[in-house]
Image (cartoon, one colour):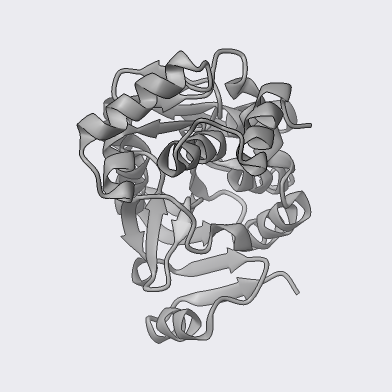
Length: 270
């Protein structure tokens, strides 16, 4: 259920009685969707200076609508912990189906990198029936699921824990990943654009995903339809670099042709 503070925020916006300008309203929406947004991201998105964005964040912080951080803004204390469970419940059937489709392509005994995100948690759940996998991940939820249900060899990357989505994010994460080589890399995405760019919401997440792409022999991406042209800003790969894409609904025709033209397999949950 949506937290009461967020309900109040959106009621104000929808009723037109808020003292927020349109950019500040959009910042609020982005913070709710992502949990955290950086000043750099917002300045690029809105085409304004970082100082302008910083003033917006200070105002929203003073209104107790966001919490100001060095370099960005997040949900107020105690609210961000609701973000991950809420996202995990969105399109859950589609995510579970995507997880099953991807797991069907992974042989027993394989070495696998699993990315962060709620779809990747569903992948981990489906992989729990496999045997003798070796897992590398920067996602605590993946570790928890597989520790509870398997005896796989699991490596968790080092770095800071981002509480709101149980991800490990740190500048050292990408460096750590480059020490390894894996047979399969399974990636979530923040957004897939019409021209085939795979995007993430945060610079450090994009860095980690880029490093994991480099160490993976076979590369899969899994995401539901809500990720088409979403608000993520940081590119980490192009569809032409993948071996397979797993999703719940057909993609736009031009994008499908681009993907297939690059020899990438498309898997849909029919």
